[in-house]
Length: 247
Image 1 (spheres, rainbow, N blue to C red):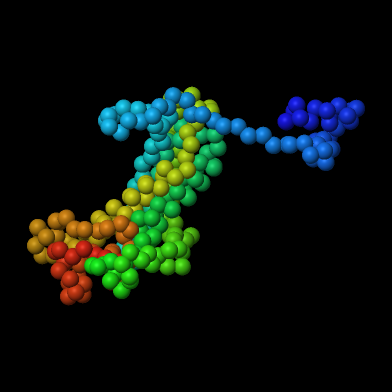
Image 2 (cartoon, rainbow, N blue to C red):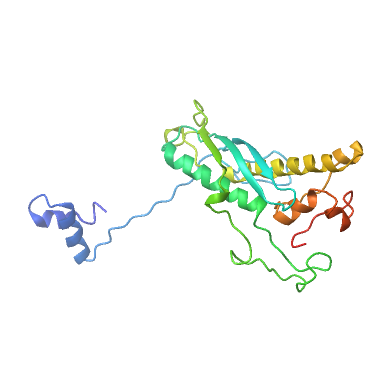
């Protein structure tokens, strides 16, 4: 860009302002844009036939999360009472932006594992839809998280004294959607809550503590049917029932 507008700058005979320089260059149809391409170093092709061979990524971003939830056993509703996240972003370039990215990805993940279900027609489940037809094609037919779904106590911190060992800018790490899967802590907290409900219903300790299916996303319908009681047991065998959506 400097080379392109060098004649324009010299034509002024004096040091022009930024606005004057840009306006004159634009009027003379001089290209004022430039582009570049960053080639990540030290990567090679991955041979999937050879386990553990190849380097497809320059570095990895790590995180950990814990969540506490409360469920309504009669309606299947749930609330996230508490979530805490610790994320490794290397030496953060801008902690405020990184924390915002982490919060957003986590809430996006909450929608993924508790609300946003793909409902397709089939021969067993959802037989009221044509086979293969996708009914949930947008926010009009499935729910996405809102501001009231954010954990009531939401804590995010960046891992301290953990610079990226690779030669990145200021030894930082990128963070966008990696925290999304940390929302699995919400899903498994819901599953533990359902298990507590089942323990109250079953007199037989063996059945109270045995494995039960809870598919993701943990929708209201699935939570309700997983919380076995005298009502739900009238419609399905609580020992073998696998909760589907839209009961």
